[in-house]
Length: 77
Image (spheres, rainbow, N blue to C red):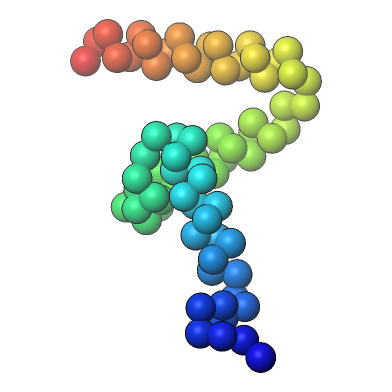
């Protein structure tokens, strides 16, 4: 028998995952729901591509490149 706090639908696990992801990205969990469909599609694609990079050194190179791009963009603003 389930109590009222555990409906067994996985929402607690999803909520916890979203909170952890939002914390890692330094954004509010509501940002996942505020984004436009295009933004969400692009974010999903970026994460899918990242998962495709298996080599740790390759991931480090990509991460370094993106960090440099973000710094460059920030200086233009």
